[in-house]
Image (cartoon, rainbow, N blue to C red; front, top):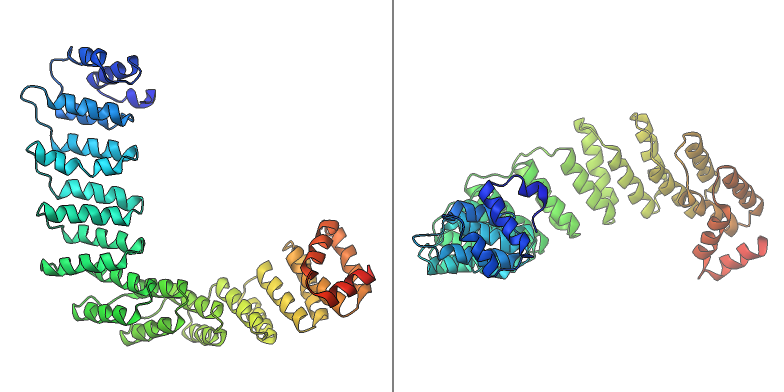
Length: 415
């Protein structure tokens, strides 16, 4: 059905056609045909105008075929394209894929543009296999895509985990003697990175260099981001070395990507080396880098290093967020430095950071384990003053203790 606001933007004759559909409850029949026959002629542009707004695909198709039977009438590319859009808009994408055959049967062989429309539709919905199906159909019609469209096809295949299909399309690309653009190489490189096929990725990278398309810092960062997401840290370092070999200076985003990957992958010392390199080069260091390094050092039980990072952060003019304080407080409690952890908790209160259960839970656990129940109760009273929901937080505290029998005995026996 066509909203009134859209209908008002139509030409008068298009509005007449839409109104005739509406008056007949959007069902095709003799009543609709009788109304349409009042018109002297329905042009292809008029057909396209109606199909662009009509959302009943059966009615739209009937109207399209009726128009084609007018004496001396021939559909144009715009009317065929409008039909394809209408079918796809109503989730009849397989029917939309048959429009090229319809065009050929009616003496209007499809051009690359018709296939590009179908490929864009499927690409926007991440239907990689349907894109490949349309591409195969292009080949049957003897149409060779432009480099731009080849890139589009390979990109959606890589995004939808159809890497082998993307590589087969690349073979066709080379077979037609087309010249790769930098984006062509990057699509394949990111796909190979994601699939863990690092040796093949470096082959493509070398070919890229050979064709005078040396990757820039954005391209290298994109590779790092994919490899980090896949947890392939060894390959990340190889890419970093390749970037240095190409004399590409890493920017803040490249450093953040790699440092984050190393810290979350348990290689915090390597991340810290890159952090020091940034400082030596005078590169602006984002607070997020301090956060991942703090988390990394705490995860390795190197809490002293985490505290050094906090001091460095403050000395650099930043204000630590609650996540950084929570991480260090938890780390200090793990090594039973609860008094120092409590001082940090007090700082979060003074700085108005809004400490929550994640902040105080390590302190409660540590006090319970060490038998310091006076401090445990004092903290509960302080939590109440800070408008914590103490009853709910105590419930979460005991849930946290479940499964640790010796801790439960301490906690339950002292409350």
